[in-house]
Length: 485
Ligand code: GUN
Ligand code: FE
Image 1: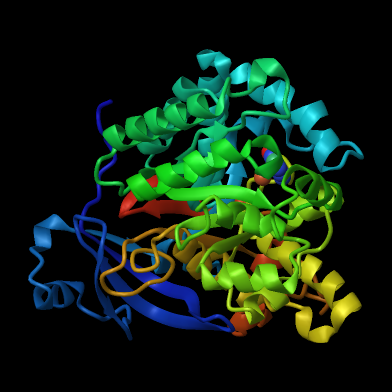
Image 2: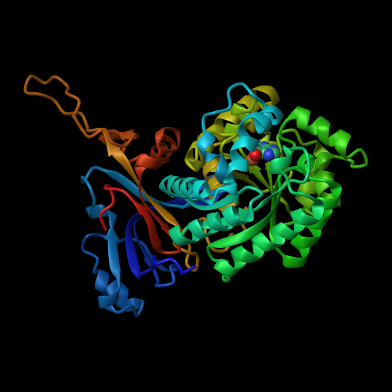
């Protein structure tokens, strides 16, 4: 497939930059210029930029020719009162691309009945490439519009449709782990790998096709994807573990999501000491493994995951929709597990990682009611999970997740609404300004200076309408009318 025609150009971004400094703190850099080179990498960061600052002298210091760079000066965009800032791209560490048409459809089912009633019938239809093409294009566009610069996708068992998903991510410029789903038992016969050998072979073929598409791995990479322990025979799991090791590929699967599922794993793997150890016994737990959910882990399982440096994708909206339970994120963080966020569409009904931040804050408060106030996560922690922790889970810790020299420009421009000030009519009566209502998050002018509050308002009330532009590796992959370059 021809490489994407998106291009990075030397660009200087000027405005406000916010990212996670530590798990519990944000860094705010106002009136700053960030220079991004033609490879999409951050080349310099210059503070204290005023309207009088000479950009050409800044550029000369960097040996950048004046004629070969663009400037995106957010101070000039929109109304002068608009609140705007750059934020790192968001990472969705667990989602199912083929399930997108089912978002919002789950009724009152729980995991095992939901799989049978909603999920397997839809996924099996991806034997049709035309269906895959429409759905996957829509999913990737929707995900980009919501600011997801990198996603860990599950496909279906079908090799051609899964390769197509990788092609679409690559063409649209989204970073992605793309996994062909392996399942050689416990699903309808027409939607099942015919044997463990076939499951392993098709996984290798699928992974090789993805590597051929993007040998650099900058955008798309394969991921070995056993659906979950109940769907896989011990032979399939062991073969996939060996394949992951041979190829040095990432691994993703589900763990300990639902109590009935955990009982089923006990029955199917009577020798295993825990659900998590089923994967460990198969050689599937390592520093490139992402385990989704982890709602009901025991302390020894947390210890094992931590020792293996395996990552957890917390999927709070799915926890709620499928009545799975409230994952104890604080306990996992305290056990030194890297916890990131996943939308788990369509276990969850939203493709937005920002939505996952607020759902995680909500779920953590339910945990706090049961286990104590320290279990509640802060806005800052939620944003860390969505960026730095996601980058670590996807093996991109040194490349994305924050604005630092040498990292790639994977970024969002956030624009919040101007809700006016305290205007008065001639009789001194207060009048609300009839500002535009297109994008949510109403910032009143008298609130403008408290940036912690502004970020909290964005997290709790913002959505894709506040995302004016999305860049990945320096390339503009999505923009709205609110963005003027
Ligand atoms: N466990 C096995 N398959 C799935 C799936 O598709 N979604 C979720 N949430 N859990 C699973
Ligand atoms: Fe899932």
